[in-house]
Image (tube, rainbow, N blue to C red; front, top):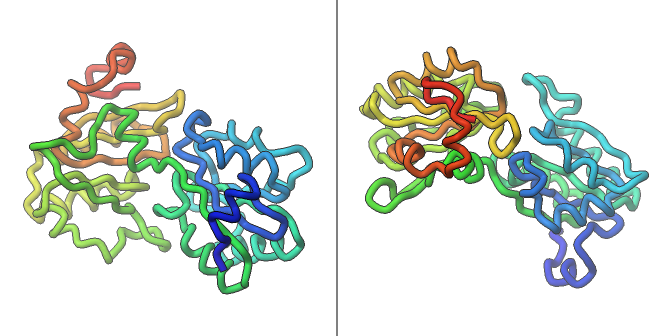
Amino acid sequence: MNVDYASALATGDAPAPGEVWLVGAGPGDPGLLTRRAASALARAELVLHDALPGRAMLRLIGAGATIVAVGKRKGLAPLSQTKINARLIAGARAGLRVVRLKGGDPFLFGRGGEEALALAEAGIPWRVVPGVTAGTAAPAAAGIPLTQRGVASAVTFVTGHDEAGALPGTIDWDSLARAGGTIAAFMAASKLDEIVLRLLAAGRSPATPVAVVAQASMPGQAVLRTTLGQCTLDARRAGLPTPALVVIGEVAGLAAALLPPISKAETTSKAAITA
């Protein structure tokens, strides 16, 4: 069962004993962590966390809490999703205040829904603390408006790979190519070749602006500005760090004009890579 929101707000911004909170950690910058998330971490007794791009928020966890890293690194996960679910349930049944700290937002490509279903089936009270998703944070940090009047009136969030690591077969790339608008692709760097081929084959212009935003909001943030026809080669040459979000659409071409002055001053090369 889901915890009653009015009751939760009345009793404080932290899990009660025997509850699990699915908490969004945001894109990495600890300044983008919500106050409710910070409060939950401070009072948590068991924290299971993803492989976060920024680890500063882990210092907000209270002394004495058990901290377990469960995120993937280069495709390897210390715990399967089934075991993560079991650990959350066991912690709650032991009467602990449990936080599942997830990168970005728990319900956007974060498997938060799977964990919520498992908790609900086990009769464990749970709630979600939304986080700032990389889908909006990364473009914003790069000066890219996902929508712009007269340029893009729709944005589509997609994932670059499924559970098996393949390009998801459920995504209709042909329709996305014809619809125009903006595509924000999570975890897409390793599948960029396939995505580009699908979009070009469906008629998307090779001149379509593309931006690859790596380590958004972090000190090592880098942005590759290129085009659909050139982005595969440019991304390979740039060797950008991960995680990275790929923005495809005319709005990516607005970034150079809209970038804040500090970002323009930090341009590192003529290859349209900015930090």
